Length: 130
Image (cartoon, rainbow, N blue to C red; front, side, top):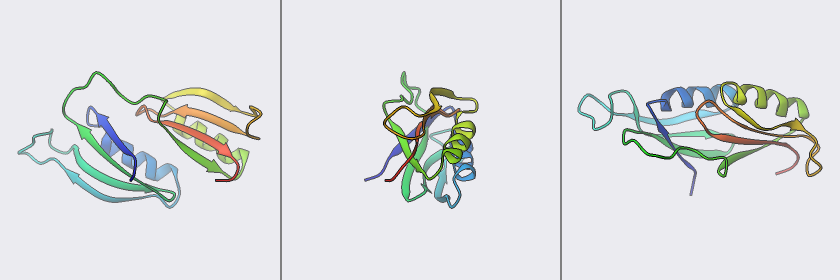
């Protein structure tokens, strides 16, 4: 079982490039794009798989318009080793997105942040153990 992200408006390729640039060691494993015959717009993602850390993720670009998008109730929880790593990731991931909880000590963690990225995906960033 693995997470599946459904992007809209053809942003899937940009999201893949962004995620693998942010997390060292991340890789795009497989990408199948729609061609000229469709049914989605040419060059958008039919299906793709990528790995961030040890987590394999699938995604696609939906050519069907939906009345929903990502919600913060689903998020990736990233365990970091230092507050500086939390701050870096919160800054990079939150740019063009939103801050749900700015970096800080909330009592349940020595340093924690929760942001949504420019694609609408939420990320909880925590200093601690898995």
